[in-house]
Length: 90
Image 1: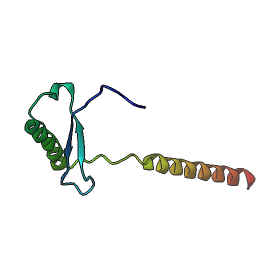
Image 2 (image 1 turned 90 degrees about the vertical axis):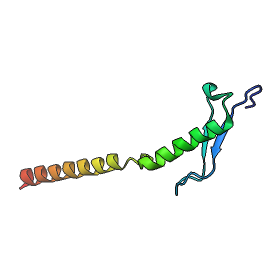
Image 3 (image 1 turned 180 degrees about the horizontal axis):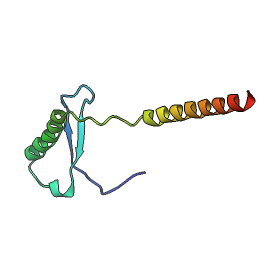
């Protein structure tokens, strides 16, 4: 798909200081258009630094909790069926 007449300003932070991310890319909103480049870069750098200082890196959802719950439920049902069968067959 080709878009014509669309131009966005992008700020790229090359050194994120993170072991997980090489760079951070910010797409400047309409409110940021026309501002000084130095101010925009400083704001982007501040966002990256604040995120790293907070220590909160959201990890991708792996579904581990759902898998553990399914295994526990399956074990409980199997145990219950085994107990019922042994009670009625003996």
